[in-house]
Image (cartoon, rainbow, N blue to C red):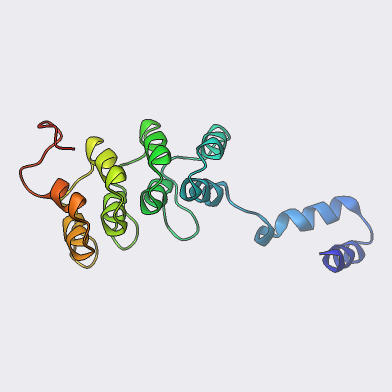
Length: 162
């Protein structure tokens, strides 16, 4: 980093304003708030998630890999983060480029409490991903019986099964 700073300084004739302009133009040094937001969700860091949200992180924006914070929190089984994101208006049915929703992630990884929260907030059980797979298919395939039971026909929020 020191060599980089010296190089920038010498290229700009020692002008501090030009150095700052060069540094600000180098976007490789910047971390997007969306990346920090999804990272906090995946880490289960609700305090950081709230702070980033208050600083302007948009709830449904995706990180550099195309994942929304809700999907990452669901994948990692972060119940409190999932609840916070949904309370703040996260799209429970948002999907990534492969068609995976947060419910797909919870079913795949076996996070039954997250699946329950998502279903109570209206997650669509019928969505298929790009492979034609539903959350139920994933739960069955990966031996997640509790989630498979929640997703099977005849069980609904109204009847109190979640």
